[in-house]
Image (cartoon, rainbow, N blue to C red; front, side, top):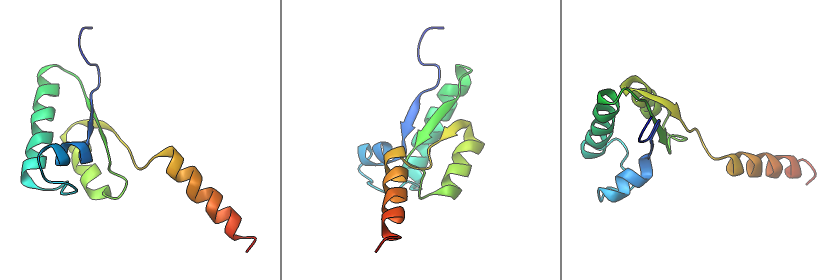
Length: 91
């Protein structure tokens, strides 16, 4: 297969590029996601979306639009928070 098999759209990257930092549910950002969805459907592929860790409802929308992978956070953040929580037990 030529071309991408499952492109990743960073929600924050997209909103920043559109001049709407952090406004992941802004109509222009959603239109960008729709454009990705339409292109993926035409090419019979799925897309991934990143930056959904604090936006579970928006992640559900992205999955309904055709995303087959939505990040819920970064592994380093998960590990750091777990390490801090463990260390605080000894305070």
